[in-house]
Length: 111
Image (tube, rainbow, N blue to C red; front, side, top):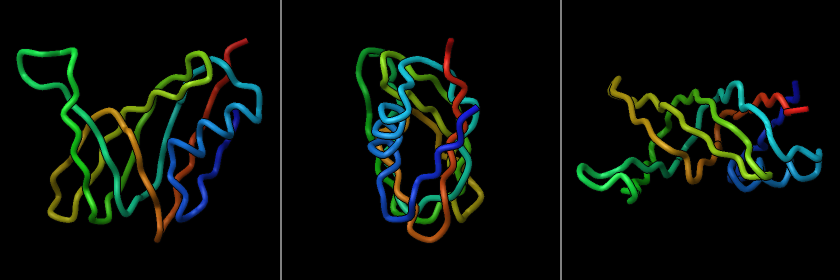
C-alpha cells in the first residue's frame, strides 16, 4: 500500500495525479482518503440526467473521508465531507485543498 501525503495549500486531485504518475501507478484501489480540507468542489448528478454533473464548491472547513480507484493513471475519488453544522456533503471530488490540516490518500496498486 502506498501512502500519499498531500501538502497544505496544494490542490489534492492534481497532486494525487502527479504522485501516481511519479510512482508508476496506472491502476489500483484508493482504499482510503482521510483528512480535513478548507475548500472543495464535488459533483452529483441531476435528477433525470445521470450523464451530467452538478458541481458545487464549498469554502468552509470540512472533515473528509473517501475512497475510489485509479484507472489508466487517473484517480476517481468519491468522498463525504462533514460540515460545521453537522450535515454532510457527498459526491465525486473534482478539487480539494487543505490549508489548516492534512489529507492522506492510501492506494493499493494493481499488479
